[in-house]
Amino acid sequence: MTKSLLPPNAGALDRAAESAVANAIGAIPIPHRDLWSPERCPIDLLPWLAWAVGVEGWRSYWPEALKRERVRRAIEISRTKGTVASVRRVVESFGGQIALREWWQTTPKGTPHTFELVLTLTGDSGAETSAAFVDDVIAEVNRTKPLRSHFTFVQGLAAQAGASIVAAARPAAYARLDLAVQ
Image (cartoon, rainbow, N blue to C red):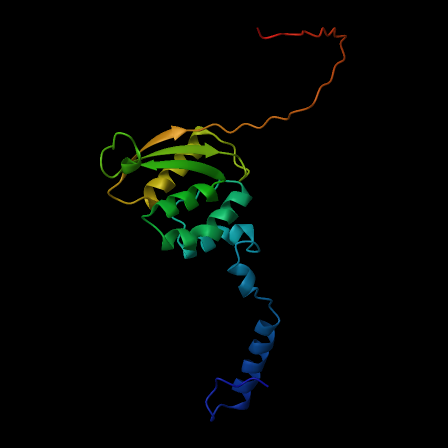
């Protein structure tokens, strides 16, 4: 039996009401662990979980896989906010890859506190690579980069192609050449 929250001088009616309410509430399944899991949280509650873990930008038109990935990576991004690592993690959470070159890595050295960002969205997140989606990624990079830093954005292109081996036969004539050195 669970402990009662009622005072010791509670009457029989109070105890009966407490028992009825406890039994009714106890029968309602409350999946607390699922509500805090990016993988198992119901999709209609996912924006609230995103808010709770600190996802700053949220779009309702994103595909479900992207939303869950953004929630999954939110805490690690927040921990490293203001670093190159956080910029990389943000882009990876959108299903993209970056090549990042800071001002001191260029020849000649660039303007201090600037960097060049080559962003390649691979579409792994399930989102269509539209101009609005790229704007969403850039907005998140702006939120996580060091505040004093400015960047130049370059859109990369990812393409996949298959290669196959094609063989053909054709007649060939060979002649042996004997060369003598004199």
